[in-house]
Amino acid sequence: MMYYSLQRQAPEVSFKEAALRGIAPDRGLYFPKEIPRFSTEFWQELPKRDFLESAMQLMQAFTGKSIPLPELREILEKTLGFEFPLIPLEDSISVLELFHGPTMAFKDVGATFMAGCLGYFSGQTDLKTVVLVATSGDTGGAVARGFLNVPGVEVVILYPKGKVSDIQERQLTTLGANIRALRVRGTFDDCQALVKRAFQDPVLFENQALTSANSINVARWLPQMLYYVSAIQQLPPGAAPPVFSVPSGNFGNLCAGLLASQMGMPAAHFIAATNPNDTIPRYMESRNYDPKPAVPSLSNAMDVADPSNFVRIRELFKNDFPKLAAKLSAYSYTDEQTLTAIHTLFKSYAYMADPHGAVGYLGLVKYLEDHPHHTGIFLETAHPIKFRETVETCLDRELELPLQIRGLLDREKVFSDISTYEELREALR
Image (cartoon, rainbow, N blue to C red):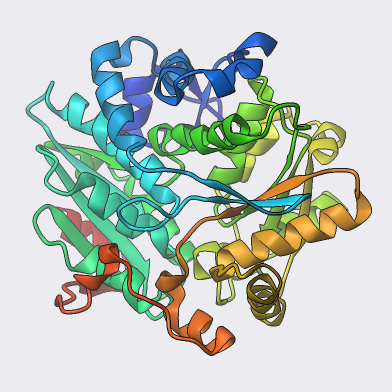
């Protein structure tokens, strides 16, 4: 499998080169040259097959010869080392829980897979690999945990000051070792702009390999298809293809689901459920892509005004808007609606959701109102404990601390404050 830049001004590269570069020299995102199509029989037989074996076939189509099969199996065993339970709430609504990994967020999948890939690649060179990542909340913690103590790899995480939860901040500032945190005076979009600028700075590539662990990196983006596949595997026999409602920020998660659909995975429709940062819902109404400054919300991991991966979604559909609109709907919700949804889910189903999952639930309910004969799945992308104050206040009850979180609260946060690209450049040098 070869990858090309969506700017189409850079040479095609292998999976290995795309993962190590993160972003192409022409500043475009890498995209697979072909979308592999799996047979109807493959998807029909999925519930009977070992999930790891199916994941091996799916991912090997994208990694190609860059990673030998024994090493790919080892990477996927770690990546899929926790469950993705599909929980029915009523006949037409289920929730796919993606928070059972080490940092209790869906990004554990992509971060663990990418860490395994770069760990394998770094063993083939004497160059140090520096992973540079911007986070709006959960990415940083997942990347930090996934890459902790990986030989030959150093991680530098940028996050916006005052715009991540306390637990999220602790997950990326308390590990030490090969993990460094830089707190940025600004928004997530400011962090992301700094990262993108760094990849165009030739000085930073002297004596080190610089790559990104955001979902702009193919090694972070592609494995996210696997939990959609897991959901399909868990459906009861004879179930109709579901609608997936995806809490969406930088749109890598949703893009992975749409990719799986184009590979043949049964899916009736997809919903991009966003918070007040509504660039894509407005685009789907007007066809005018008009990002506005990001605004903070209770679902902070989705506080993204200019989602990087939407260009990949458009590429999946060959920039054919009618085809995109036939497969994707997009809705946005306020913090007040989010809190109401958290309360409704608990009152109606005794289900405790975080703000991101609540937004996904709202999107699914909206779509099912107009399409009552469908069934749907919304993604619960983070454990509610990561938004403890919000959820406890909303439900007027105290949350129990999971084991993954208890050890964080007594650790000291270690970070450096930066505001400018010059400060980032100095930190990286």
